[in-house]
Every structure is written in structure tokens, then in C-alpha cells.
Length: 481
Image (cartoon, rainbow, N blue to C red; front, side, top):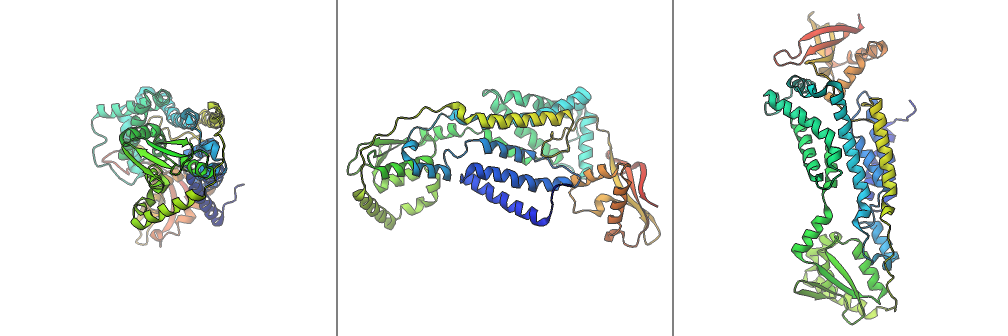
């Protein structure tokens, strides 16, 4: 009741979140952009949670908080370019150890581990290994397929019992061990592989893809390893520049900030007429040609590569380089010695955010906050899943005088199935008669019920077992005559 919600505010929040995500991706005012994204997207994503169904994309906000604290803009960003232009000598030093940037990744992995671990513990705590029984596995599938309006996968997912047991035990084992596997570099790839198999099997069988979680598996890609492999296959490029020319140092510092890691060695040498050179294997280039060879290692310059080989551009580039080189002013300065960089300087803030997130997840688990926002445990699917489902039906007499019943899902086809199911759970609460009367008043105006009389809102329990889908087991009148 204290959250202002209007279409105008929601629209503004969406626009701000999109702009902030773009500027953060480009690395422009990176931390500020990430914080603005957390606030705007946090509001925007909160509004849909107020209508009876919590959508579990909490991790979008959680990871954005981690990125607020991370050193995301040290390289390959506009912020890095600006800093390199202002303080070129500092940015010509060797980059700090990669370990300095490992904390945000480890925090994200631990958060993912918590997302899996807590539902796994709930599964085991509710029914033990019986959760993986064929009867329970089929109950989960039948219930979800019923919710989806009779959808089925293209294969017989409810087939042989031993396969269902294997799937159930595998799910529990994955959820309970992911956090352990991800902590050790020797088993981290195993954890990533199992996670992708788990999510895509769940998508194939239950149409639950959890795409936001799958996107996070990009964090397992070892980009430094890929860059090193590329350097070995394509060769290491050595780029020499005049150490006494401040303009040269500034240009190289900017290029160094946006160069792919491990593929270029920038070497400062004493001045000379053609100091800027590049060498790759037996191939070498000078002046404009050296910068063109370097462009293959600088992603922001890739769109310009076809143009850089056109003859008019080559002639113009050589003339510009010659003119600038002739007018450069050299300053006899020594490059500063590399300052010692503490590895922990990139760890503290992400670790604090991670500890806060994990504490929030433990709190959510302690109170079983599965339908909460912005902190909650992800769906547990715990317990014994009987082959029955609650539904809300409207019962009445149609214009032809026949007594009929219509499922609420048919009256609101534009509402996603999982939201209808959540509304069913809320409306079925007999302690909320006012809510039931309000729902009946709304659906009574639907075209499908035009001309009907003696309308009643009824909570029913129906079977979702094959051959008996929709068979009414019990009914309770919630509202109406």
C-alpha cells in the first residue's frame, strides 16, 4: 500500500533501467549506472509481483547489486578510456593480477549455489528420498501440464519409473552439491555442465527454463584462457611506441584500455623517426600500418577494419601519421614504476554484498519465503504431489437454461497460466469472502458469460491424472447465490 504505482512511473522506470543497462554495458559511469539500474529495475520488476504471483527473477537485481560493488570498468570500458587519457602513464603499467577480479564471480557462483541448495534441502526435508519416487515425479509433471492447459512435451516424460527416479535423485543431488562443486576449480566445469542440463531438461519437460539463471552461466567462461589460446594461435603482437612522446603514451594508454587481454605487448622504446611499429611473427608494419595491424586486437575498432584497407584511407592515414609524427613534442620523462596493487582491493565490496545476499537467502529459507520480493527462496517443488489440482470455476445457468461450469482460465485467456494458478491459491482462501465476491463481479462481465444467471464462484478440486483430467473431486461455494 505504500508503493506508488502508476503507468507513468512504471514507464519511466523501464526507460531509465534500459538506459542504465546500456551505459553500464558500455562502461560509462559504470558503478553509477549499475546503481541506477538496481533502483529503477528494482521498482519496475516489483510491480508485477503485486498481483498474486511472484515471478522468480530476483537474481537480476541480486547480480546487479554485485556489479555495483565490482571493478567492472577497469578495462574494455569508456571509463577506462577516459582514465587512460587523463593519466596515461598509470595505464601503461601491466594490468593487475586477474585474481583481483575473482570476487564478484565467486559471489555470483555462491548465490547460484544458494538458489539451488535451499530448494534441495526443502525437498529432502519434506519427504526424503521418496520425493524422487515415480508417483511424485508424475504428480509434478501432471500438475504442471494441467496448469499449462494440457500441454505435453514431445516425448513420453512420464514413462518408465526407473528413469523418473533417476531424474528425481539427479535433481536433488545437483541442487545439494552444486555449491560444493563450484568452489573447486577442478569441479567447476562439472557444476556448470550439470546446471545447463538441469535447466534445459526442466524446460523440455515442464516449460520452466529459468533463462535469467542460465544467462549467469556465462560467468563460468574463462575469458583469459580463451585470450591466451587466441594469442598462441594468432601470435603475440608487439607494439613499440616512443616512450618520450606524451601524445604517443596517451594514445597507447587508451588503446591498452580496450585491447583484448594477452594478445598485445606494448613496448616503450627511445624516440626515433619511425618509432611506432608492430610485429607479428615475421610480419611487421610501421606508422599507420602498425595501428591497422593493432586494430585486429581492439574490439571497438573491428567495425572500421574493412575501411582501413581501402587505398584512399591508407594514403590519408599515412599522411596524417606523418604530419602528427613531425609535430610531436617529446618530453624526457621516465615511466613511473608500477605501484603495488593489493589483490584484496577488489574483494571487499563484492564480498560484503555477497554476504548480505546469502544472509537474506538464509532468512527467506528460515521463514519459507517462497513467494516474497525482493528476497526469497526459489520454487522448491517440495512435498508429496498428489494427482489433484485446485481450480476456480464459475457455475451458472446459460441462456438456454442449462447449468454449466467454466474454468477461470478460460475466462481470462490473456493471463499467463502460472498467474492464474497463483490467483486460484489466493481466491481459494475461504477467509477472504470479499476477494471472492470481487472476482465474481469482474468475471460476470466477461462476454463468455453474457446472459448467464445464478452465477456462483466455486473452488473445486479436480484430478490431473491421465484419463481423468478435470474430473471434479470436491467443490466449495466461495461467492454467489
